Image: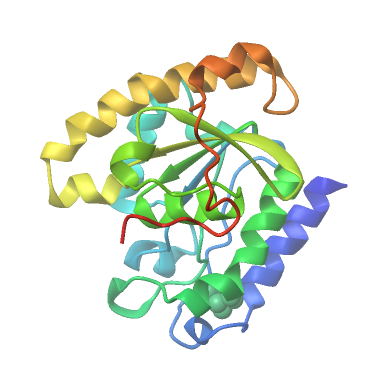
Length: 227
Ligand code: SF4
């Protein structure tokens, strides 16, 4: 039932005209992967290749993501991959706040239907958005990396891991080693721990991965300290 609603939702995204990005896209990119994936990867927005093909994370950044997922003990086929914004902003500019707001209900419903135990947010924009949805204060990418956070999105208790966007390593090769360390280190551990639990992101065994101060006074308001 949830799986058929997910495919229906993907069709709605492909036809969506909620924000101005629909006018400049070639294809909307709803996301792809199994409807009951234990792990989701969320990026910022489709790029040129994704817009052309209507699929997330294709091209060089997608290839790099595939190899990073392997380092975390995952294959692409077992992960649901999507973006915060489902249509490509012209010229690869950052999505505008009103575009993110218009598109977010799709991401929230995807999470609600798929019920992942872990969401890997790649890039600052994805991390900041996931934290806001989870009611967590955003500490900036540098402080969000390296640990796993617990939150609730779309009624689903889940873990959130944040790292760089794979595309960043294409422009700055020095980041590739850091991404590889993240995926083979704290992300791999959190994948193994989260998937071993089965059902929901809770469990006392996970607490060692959580930041004890992950909920701050800005809870629910985003608390963005990393502009
Ligand atoms: S970016 Fe999202 S809200 Fe805007 S047109 Fe595309 S699917 Fe609709």
